[in-house]
Amino acid sequence: MAVKKKKEDLKQLAEKLTFKTKCLWDEMNDANREEAWELAGRYMNFLTRGKTERAAAQETATLLAARNFADMSAPGGLKAAGRSGGWIIHQGKLTGIFAPGAAGPADGFNIIAAHGDSPRLDLKPKCVYEETTSGFGMLKTNLYGGLKKFQWLARPLALWGFCALKDGRTADIVFGEEASDPVLTIPDLLPHLDRKAQRGKKIDEAIAAEKMNIPAASIPLGEPEDKDRLRLAVLKILHDRWGIVEEDMVSSELEIVPAGAARETGLDGSMIGGYGQDDRLSVFAALEALFSLKKKPPRPTLILIYDREEIGSYGSTGATGNFIEHLAARAFEAAGLEARWLAVHEALMKSNGLSADVEAAIDPDYKEVHEEINSARLGRGPCLVRYTGGAGKYGASEAGAEYMARVRAAFAREKVIWQSSLLGKQEEGGGGTEALHLAAYGMNIVDCGPPVLSMHSPFEISSKADLWMTVRAYAAFLKMESTFAE
Ligand code: MN
Ligand code: MN
Image (tube, rainbow, N blue to C red; front, side, top):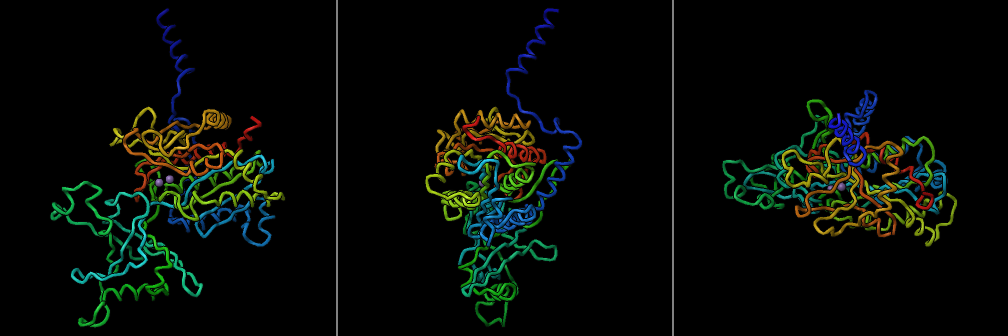
């Protein structure tokens, strides 16, 4: 008897003392699963329709307009936003959202920052050339963000773009997504002949960025004795389809992304596969969380969907820019307050921040790069990532202990199942997010997002259960009280 009693005591003790993650699927009832499936369906649609930062901003605006949010840049928009919330799209690529809370903005906001850009290939400003020997009119690409080059070869690709012409006209391009469209591709060398050119080299050096070019046309114009027949063939197609000439490409943003729709993944369909989940998974979850609020949360909300996170957040639409000050000031005005410098900056300093970005899930075939005790697992809920960076925490803003405790409490109140994670082993590599750029305003901020597999690849994998729970986590965050009330 005594022995058995001791065993039970240990079980109770373990229950009380240990921090265990939970498999969400074990915790979800049939209704929850149905919700997760429905949510994933809408999310996959969002992913498929919003493959660039511009397209994601447009999709976001469409969802906001359907929920009665106002375009704050339109006449009367600011006043309407004061009642039911609103958005500002800066330079077509950075979206700022404001929603009123029970309190005004003077004591701070609850701020979620995500990003709408993803690693991809851009077309260079001068990108059309002729490869006479092999017989192609070609397009030259330029890397954007940290991608593994070999993953982009020998697969269907689409062209999404935006052209701005000298006379003020603009043109949107989507090519390669409809079943009736051709797709584009970057050929790869056959294994029979890759021994010197690729096989013996380090994986990153095996494919040179300058060799990632697209054969865009193979039907020459004119007669055999004519010059530049294939180059002209490409330029003529661009002109016939979208009305642009070669110089217009200098004022265009032409992006090469994986072609095709996001798909349910796995024999059980429990996962979501698709391009651009870093970070549109967090973007979509943040929007859903905002829409799920039944009443005004204690504090006003700001959601920022930045651009250029994948290249270090530089530029006028990135998180190193000052757009957040502008959005916060507009929120003051929407609330009928004067947006004085000190008041706006004090509000930002008192804000609660959440850097909503995806986290690396443990890869089943490469467990050795993860430090398993502190790594994320797919299907175990959104990750609270106290610090990013590599060894030595370089570049990490690191959330403070008190703030971590408050976020934990907010999650517990709403029964959020979450996991604590770090990106990988200390000396394996590393990475950062936007958190440090918002932390510069003096606010508390922590990274929190769902885990994904194959991050930065053309087909990233997430869990339907994690999406579902991340919405709940972000909603719990938006309901957090002000720093001083708790
Ligand atoms: Mn990201
Ligand atoms: Mn990324």
